[in-house]
Image 1 (cartoon, rainbow, N blue to C red):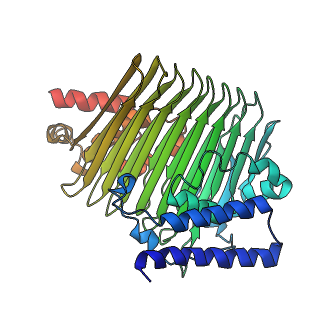
Image 2 (cartoon, rainbow, N blue to C red):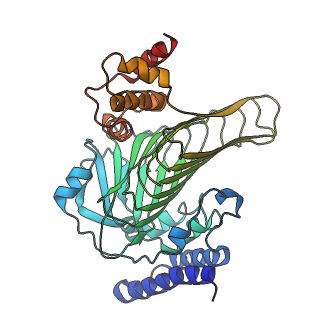
Image 3 (cartoon, helix red, strand yellow):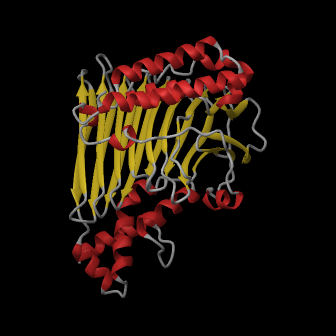
Length: 456
């Protein structure tokens, strides 16, 4: 038996064991779920894990996942004190998952507005599985990637968010995914489904964090559906333990006049891959992608984004910043596709990278694919290092080297962080990127000050 076949078989054997356990304890699941699970398993078996011979994975080696021996867990036990220390200090409607298992004890939804539902996927399936079955998997099916097929095969838990037309959720909806350290690494395959009705508004915060010694595998699929005029701001703060493996596929569908804003902030994880795709299907739809990834040690962080302009008069704007230290490696592949007859669209893309070490690496590939002629599109990427003259200028003002480097690194990230409206999120990022600074700085002023110092 080849190594590749053995790797796939090990995951499928885990699935077979899991299905047998579920049938014994809960009885047979609805036929449509079983059919999709079988389709996911069959597709995963046919595709196998991606290799660097696959164009979409040429810079990312997933053998650490393929060769891993991951168990599944039903336990949601977690120290309340540890959870409290890891939880974002946000006043929010919160669902918490421990290694993919829902924890009612660590969740607190509070009082939701009328017409808004936030519940674990397991509960949504138990209460009305047919209502979930229609949208689930419509955007990200088993053919999207081997990992989406694997997610479908193992799909059990996650979050379902439904916003009635016209509803407004003032407090953020926080989905917290905690990773535990244990004797054996575990895997989880959470699913997030958001259905935002027309003219509804909400902020979704997806937070991945865990105990420092954890070494688990998370394979997440999120499907976000925005009806006409809906507004959704989506924060993904990924600060998983450095031995964790993290793969995520986020697929967004946007109707006329909807607005989706993504903040994809990656600080943790040993091996990270994010796929973010938005389908701009109606005139006036707008997608904003803001990203920041910070790697150190031997971290590998791969971001692939795609804005599909499927209708005329749609708008996309993307700004991704990468900061890499030590032997860390980053990948950015951003693509804007303008379909035929999608006239009068605007699609802008920018990627800038800062290397803090001579051994750090970045592979950047911005792309435009245009099949219409009345469009405004641009893309570009830059890579550089900290300006030694600016460091010197700060040091002459009594600032030590470490703080000076932290200030200038934070200034580089400022263009993205300035747009973050949640202090709890921006403070986590600032601490990771720049360390503990002597005071909280105004980022816009910091950028101006560093440029002024450079010109002196």
